Image (cartoon, rainbow over the protein chains, first blue to last red):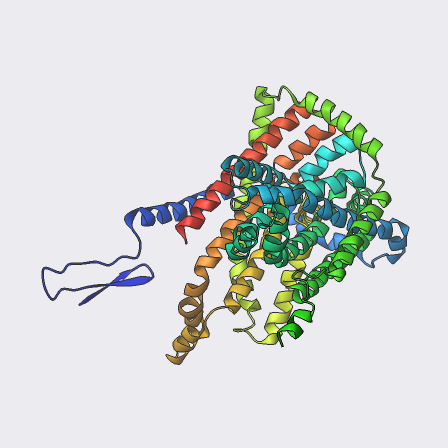
Length: 281
Length: 266
């Protein structure tokens, strides 16, 4: 028996009888070719990118000095800025994130129902709902914010709509998938009892998808809190506006205050979500 | 006996759940309250729809002039470069950092600082990290690469550490029992168990970096985002439309590619 190394695996070729000349391989030639193409493509893309990217080396040599300067100007953190504008902006950010998520859920529920093929038996409607969800997800929340700033003017309204429209795709996709995974048993029992469609949904599907629903909603709220903190950079309200102002005035100690406030809120939101998830699910 | 059973009232099949109803009502009340705080009103909405019609009207026909298209392609290309380089470095860095954060392989005094570092990398939005790097290394692609590298470490290292914590320790034990040095335990006991999932995280992160590399230009960190924000601020809405369409097309191609890679590694 001859041991032939083959990648991470070893192939045993039997030489005892001439007739058995079989080589076992884990993957088909197409798969191997595809994987090779992938590795090659990855390396190729990295090399090309590194060779052509435009980096100004002088800026890089300068970096340690600049970082030292940045830290020096951020320290000590000036807490006096917090009551002056940062606090209200922080609360506004939380409202934007929460209200945006609620609006998104309201709009995503019907789309999720339309996207689930076991609830909506029409392939066209499924396709339409999935298209809407994909387009919502493909546009970054900052781009949504730009569009809504152009519509509603700068302010929290634009931010809330941006969060809502970005979240529809996320919530709708996951909710639709959860619905599709629901067991048909309870639903058939309700159908057999002659229940109307709303009752079938409320008593047949909803209890099965409720844990998933809350998990999705909480997860999205957590992401929304993070994202709503930057929407202000394009004028869509929240703490990003305070951050943008501080940066434009080069008040780095104020930037540090705002960033610490954001950090505290993001971590608090994550802890809260983890706690609620552990209790609910 | 029988009459006794019949007399006992049956509990309703679907009892009403008052705590849940109250929670829903509270949520609705909050929504109305928050909407009033954030100054939502029907008039603003109607005016907004009016603006939207004008805004969309000015997007058509989309800009396709040669000089603008050259600008668009240059920006997209830079975004692509930023995403690829940042993903490569971020993923390479995540391997050791994720390993150091795995609580089943490392002692607590190693995992705690590492996990804190990962949480710090993940806490800030990519755009905020980009602001700091723009200050540190100036405007341009380098700031974007560094910002997205940090964000990638925060995400991939966390998931990688979690994947390592879920592995079966039997194989690790078996390799340790042969007296293999630590690196061999990692390479032959741990890596084969997590590599497939790692490929999944890596492709996901590349996709995520590509999305964000089109945005960080807003704060001057290179890529198409700068061109996009400039077009927006100059009311060049026709060019803005072209840029947005290009970004969305790029992201859809990337998503399709990600699905193919996922199939390959199932």
